[in-house]
Length: 215
Image (cartoon, rainbow, N blue to C red; front, top):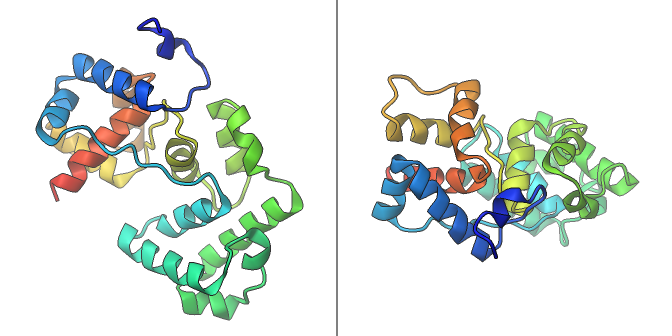
C-alpha cells in the first residue's frame, strides 16, 4: 500500500496497520507526541462495542469519574440482562435511581432507548456514513453532545480522525505536554489538534496514554 493511501481515505476505521502507520506519522510531525511514545510505548488502541450499552456507558461517563460511571454501568448490567433498549425501558425511574442514575441521565437513557427501539436511530447503519453525518445523527438524540458522539466514533466505530475537544483529560495532557500557561479551552484544543489531521484519534490515544501514566 502506498504510504499516503491511508491519508486519502475519507471514511476510515483504524486497523492495526493504519494505527501503526498513524503513530509513525505523528511521531515524525510532533516531537512532543514522539517523546510520549518513546517513553511510554505504543498507546492502547482502546475499543468498545458499537452498541446501545456503549452509548449508555458514555452517557454515564459524562462529567463524572470513569470509576464512578463504571460502577453504575456494572450495576445496570447486573439488573438488565441483556442490556437492550427494550429491556432498559422496562425499568422504573426508582429502579434506575437505585442503580445510580441521576434524573437527567435517566431521561437521557430513556430518550436514547426510545430512539433506537422506534428505528429513529439505527446504530448498525452509522458506520456507512462519514464522520460529520454520524455526529449529526447522534446529536439529534437529547443527551448526546459533542463529547459523547466523538468518543463513540473514536472508540466504538474506530474512526481515525476524531478528537474530543471537550475532554478534560486531553486538555490537561496537552497543557502539560505543550507546556502551556493555562489549560486550553475546547476551541484552543481543536486548533492545536489540527496539526494531527487526519490522525487525531491516534493523537488522542497518545495523550490519554500520557495522562493515565502521569497521574
